[in-house]
Image 1 (tube, rainbow, N blue to C red):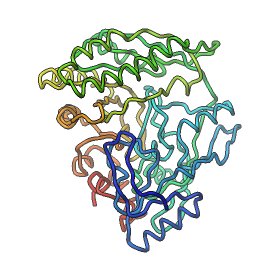
Image 2: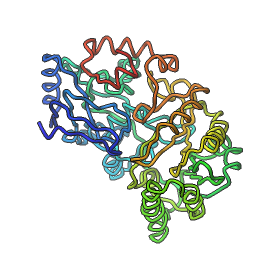
Image 3: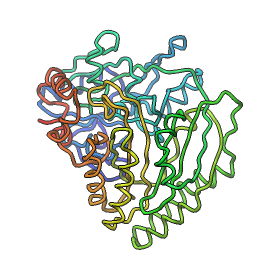
Length: 433
C-alpha cells in the first residue's frame, strides 16, 4: 500500500482513495481485488493518469499497475507481443523496434499505459486503421471475485469485443496480447495551409495518405496539416535546428509561455493565436514510425474529443468556427481533426462507422465548460460519441442510443461484475448503475 493521494496528468482530477495498491504480479493483483470484493468495497485501476475524465477516481480502493509493466513474450515470427497491462506505449514501441516490430498505428502521445489506452478507445489517425484496441488479440482479466479469465479472439470473439474497450468496468486487465507488424518508416510532411482548402479536400487527403490530420486554432483561417506515409527510402530525420525550433521551441516552450500569458490576459488570445499560426513552418522528414507518430507534450491542458461520421467533419469544423466567433470564446489551443476505420468493438467510438475525430482543448486551469458544452452540442447533432477518457457531459441514457452493441456490453457487465465492484461515480454515470 502506498501514499493514497492521486492527481491526473492535467491536474483537473484528484481523489484520496481509502487504499492504494501497487501489485507486482497477477496473483497479487487477484488477491487485492478478491479481498476488496469480499469486503464489499469498490475498485478502480489507474494507468499513467493521462485521462482527463473522472474515470479512475475513487474514495475506496485504487490499484496502480506501475509495477506490472514487463514484456512477457515476443513472437517475432507471428509478430505478436504479450505484455503486462501497466507498460506504457512509449516503452512498448521502443522495445518492439529492437525486434524489428511496430504497432500499425499510434496516437500523437505515448504516455498512456496499454490497458488505459485500449480501455478508453484511444486511437491514432488513418482512414484504414482502427484504434489501439483493434490490435488486441487476447487479454487476461482479473474479475471482481479474483478469478482470472483468458479472453482470446480465436476462442470467444464476442467477449473480446466487449472487454477490449471496457472502461475498467468488467475487471482489471493484467496482460494484453497485441498483433504487431514489421517495423516501418514514415515520411512526415507538415504544411501550414488555409483552413478552407483543407476542409474542401478532407476526404481526398485522408484517402491518399496513410495518416492525415490537421490542427487549427478557432478564430483563425490557417491550419497545420500533417501527412505521414510509409517510405522504403533511407530515413532523413528532422534536423536538430528544426526539431529545436518547432518541436521544442514553438510547440512547447513558446506555446507554454503564451498559454500562461493568456490565462492572465485573456483579451490577448486572438493576437496570440494569429502569432502562433504565423510562426508555424513547413517540415519534411522521415524516421521510424514510432518516432513520427508521438510527440513530446510539456504544456498541460484539458481535452474533449468526439467521434463523428467521417464525411461530416468539414461541416462540424465550420460550425465550431462560427460558434466560437459568435459566442466570443477565447481559445488558444488548437482543434485537432483525425480519422479512423470502423470496427466491431462494443464500446469503441468507431463502432460500425468510418469515423472522424474532432478534439478541442483548453489550457489547464482555465474554465473550459462553456466552450466544451457548445462544441458538444454541435457534435451531438450528428450522433457524436465522446472519448471515454476525455471530458464530456453525457450520461448513460444519452450514450446507449449511440452504440448498436450497448446491450451486449451491458449483458457482459452483468455477468462478469454483477455486484458492480469495478465502478465509481463516472462509470455509473456513463454506463448506468
